[in-house]
Length: 265
Image 1 (cartoon, rainbow, N blue to C red):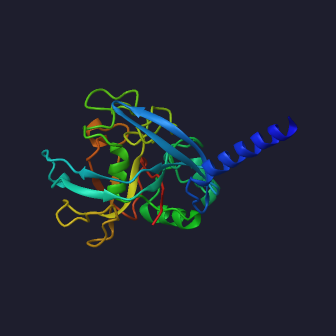
Image 2: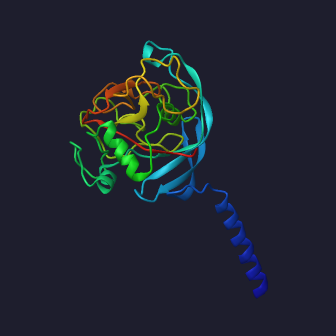
Image 3: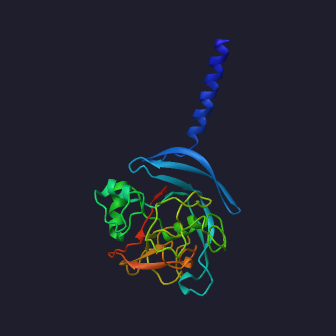
């Protein structure tokens, strides 16, 4: 009987070890779990990783193709074009003031609170944060792909009221604690509303000549950088999947923060 039990334990141990070995080994990260996320008609099994230095959790975004942009009235969002995206890690939440303080030993935020998103940081300061942590800002294409999570609607929750998923535009408070609303189907919180988010890309006035992959689109005037996601106190349309804008890289704003990515290529 003892031999049978030991053999069974050994078999189970080998199976568990085999399961763990199938997960990507990503330097600087530890695999936590696989979790299923649902949002409207989309559902994905997402691998969750923890960044060892910052303690932030990341979703492993699956590779895929998507149509980026919107053929609406805003000419900054045209032409709609197909983009191929390789798998990458994206932080499930915006970088909080607690994490920023831990890495940068300061807190420039105007609306103070350790669980609030860090804001009032310029693009160059975000680059310094990334250098210290081995992370990166997501490209604009990565950001939109992650926002959409397989959807083609105006917002990742559909076309109608998204109060369960995002802070609505009529709120006047500059920011709210990260991760309080429901996530999208990739397990990402606050992709719409709360703090606006810096992206890696140089600003271009439309998508003519943009990359067919999700790499950051550089060139042009590097002092102008893309930000995404909408923010509190503005129309919710600015928090739609395709809405995009720019800001001077060296400037700061009380509602402008960021989330971070890790590229696997």
